[in-house]
Length: 270
Image (cartoon, rainbow, N blue to C red):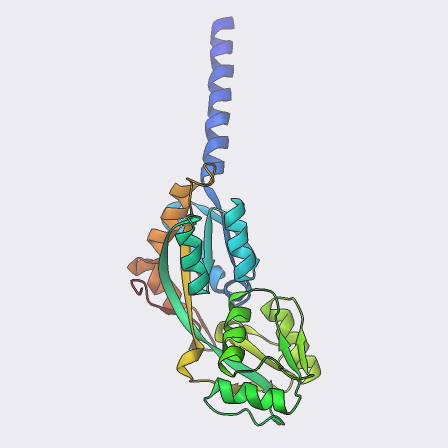
């Protein structure tokens, strides 16, 4: 009897250790952007991924620059962001295993419907020049996010070091930046996904869209275990394989708000 009781205790202990180990394997940490989180996309993707794989995903929503830094520190297993140049550098430096394109949407310039800076149209560079010359209030995220990186590219294309006295950096996510713009009647660059899910629009409206330069690509990368041996490469790769598969791409395409699609799948794109 003593032998049987001891055997049962040992079996239960081993079972508990196995369950604990599986619980660790069955959850990965994803560093991603505020735009993917605040748009509501993960509410569509992650339950479908868990149903297909059994893997939970814990999302930490940051600006793209901060998300990549989280990967560099080994604090995430996978990074899902939208600054292709920064993503390619992340992989080239050995922090990521390989970059995969997942989906795209676009950036839009929103601002007060009265549009005192005369930005309305399809040319983001002309719009920024008008904002600067008329000293209009512009809210920049100023947080090294993918949206902030895109905004700085457009100011550079406009050839403007002086962005006007109305240029304000909030150092905040997309949702808070939109809230500031809505409450102050300011202009702001936003990804379309967050804009479509944003409720507190006040007098804001889309003023500039359709410029090819406003294209917004998202990519995903597993953190390299050669840099951080503790990262859960198997779980990260499961998510990557799923999100670029026909099932994952269909889940991306199916996410809509008011019957308007927020993201467009394009796995396989360079």
